[in-house]
Amino acid sequence: MNFTVIALTSVLTTSVSFAQATTNPNSAKKPNSIRVLAVGEPPISKVTMLSNSLEERVAQEIEVPAESLPPKTLFISKAEKKNAPRTGSEKEEERAKIPISLGCMSPSITLKTSLTDLQFRESEEESQNYFKASFPVGTKNGLVILSKPHSDKTWKKPRLLFLSDDLTAFPQDSVRIINSSSYTMGLIIGDQKLSFKPGQVKTLPLKANSTIPYQVAIQSKDGGWVRIRNTALTLPTGQRVNLVLSNRPSNPHKPAKVNLFAETPPSPSPAKDLQARN
Image 1 (cartoon, one colour):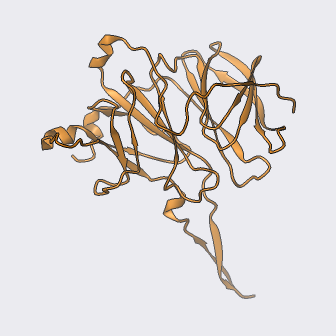
Image 2 (cartoon, helix red, strand yellow):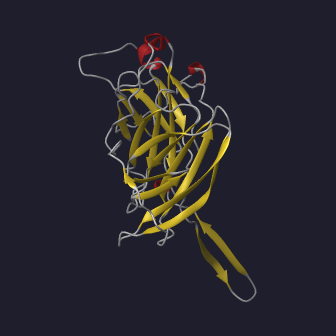
């Protein structure tokens, strides 16, 4: 596959950085929201033979270790600052929980606090943070991308990307390419040729209600390109698409895959229904 690509300037890395967005001053009155997307390859279940006699063959599936999958739920709260105690009701309003499922976009959760100095924990009783995030001033709707580094066997230290879901940063009739994999990836979409280092993100406008051909390739150790997808993307009017590149360690020849998440801009669910404590 012949790729002549334009290298992108680093847009996002695994540090806490977000797409900046220009916001309307009146938007401060609207609630903030956050979503989480964990991408990657699910663990492969193993089977052990309990009996392998000629008369009877009995097999049992071995349950995969919990740490080989991302947490099923994350508890979000405002990071407490020293010498700034808050009342119980204030803490309650700053707490929410969000369900996580590998390969699925979480619901959009409304927060009664700004998207700054947030902490994510695996349980309400957990004292140690799973990770922390601080969105830049002006971001109203945030998206956290979680992925497991290629060499890691557990989700204890995921790779993190923090993005703005605001329409100014990710508008309708566009595709956002997110390279959460551990590899340099090449993309041909329409007449554009681009390359993405790990952690890089770019949003491209697309013609609404159209079908656009695209190809994705992974850069090999010798500098060549191995194509992993050659298909087309259909974008209905008013929608937007997250095209997420993630690791696929089970295939050493094509160790990355493409995940598509088409959507209309999300509407946050009522905060009163999403509190961690009722």
